[in-house]
Amino acid sequence: MKLSKETLALLEDIEARIDPETEEDYVNQWRDFLYDRFDGDIFEPIRKKCSAPAVDIPRIDNINDALESYDNMLRHQLQDVSSALGKKKGNLCVRANYGTGILSSLFGAEIFVMPRHTNTLPTTRAFNDTELIREKVEAGMPDLSCGFGKNVFEFGELCAEVFEKYPKIKKYVNVYHPDLQGPLDICELLWGGEIFYAMYDEPELVHAMLRLVTDTYTEFIGKWFKLFPPSGEMNLHWGFLWHRGAIMLRNDSAMNLSPEFYREFALPYDGELLAKYGGAVHFCGRGDHYIEMLCSLQGLYAVQMSQPQYNDMEVIYKNTVDKNIKLLAFNKKTAEQDVSRPGGFRHNLSV
Image: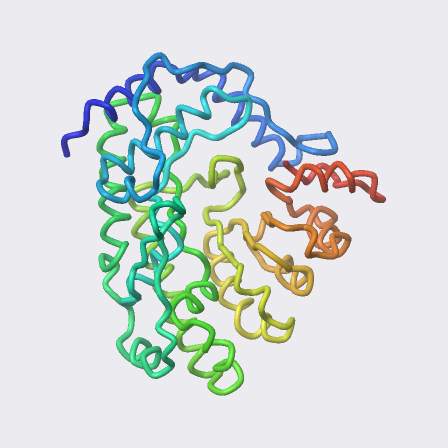
């Protein structure tokens, strides 16, 4: 694919600005934290050397513009890399940035692009039709190139091809896995609110859909990892954290479940993926009612949560940092307020 002169100029500028010694040091700070060689209270990595861009390239700031072409998406993502090089904090990374509906779009869920003024990633519309869900279960695994699947893999192939021409970018700019959510989240994106009634009325169908979604996740990320194999040591996600293991599961829908329903409908499928790949789990909202079960899973190395104000944080701390499970990219104000708790954070919390 022929890239625009703006994207090429951005690539050249980033390649020139990457200082291997600086980036190795920055990643080593994370490595020491993740492998228990950090002895402070709160981990906050610092890039020792920053660099400003040498060129003034028009920005693509609206995600709707990035969705229009792979060249635009690449420039949109590389802008964050350029910005990170000029800051004390921030990872050098890009992703196929197609929103939360990537896996749900494989099953035929309608893609919904947000109004331009919101500058928000797209998603999919839920079916809100249990009979249609039954048909999807009977149909089996979808084509991985349907919906946003096509965009994800074609963009990934472009990154692999382009980065080969820039040795420092290839080594230090990570192409991390797209937002595949987690099994329960994907099922809610597909099914809509009816899934919560179905947990009472047709639990076998819910499990059948979760089984299908988990298998599809496994096939999809396996195909992605052929393009960009994960490190066996640690991997990054977003521009602000590294974690042990290969995947970052999203578990936002779990806040709607009782502990009993979490154990039945979420834990087995999350557990299967974490046991296979290892990694971290993100959730928004409340998670203190199931955090103990979550943190019992083999292969869970870290939790990334938002909105501590909705949680009993002592319950969260006892099941994460006290058990040597990292709390990543945590709210700094809350961390500074709670660091004096008995035992502190045991060197297991980053902001």
